Image (cartoon, rainbow, N blue to C red; front, top):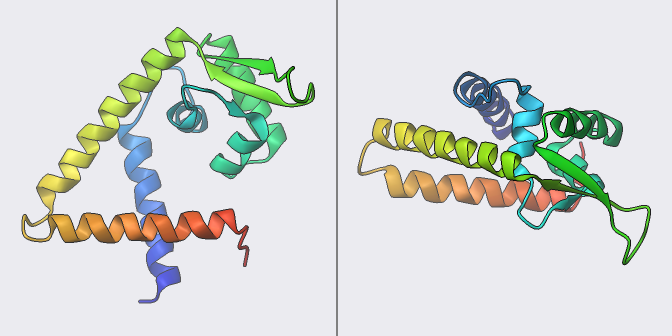
Length: 144
């Protein structure tokens, strides 16, 4: 099995694993992912689009949905460039994000408990290394 095959299989399995276990009532999977990655200091719409790997128009519709749920709010970045739109979580959104983090932590414990105790630290190190490699490729905009 090569890297492409493993990455593909891992991607499908992780997505399925998260879709089944990381649910927020009334939110789509994409909205759930957005809630999980919006930092406390907010994020530019364009950066959120890149982070989620979605078109800007798709992210705009996604954020409009979160605004309707009162979980997020958009604000223009007036100090620097009026065209830049920032997204922030509301208090209700922060509460949902905290619920997500708890669910993600529980999933992590589930995986840890299923991993042989002698392999845990090595596996975690390899996963962080893989994450770092993929993050670097994303920053370099490496596209096949």
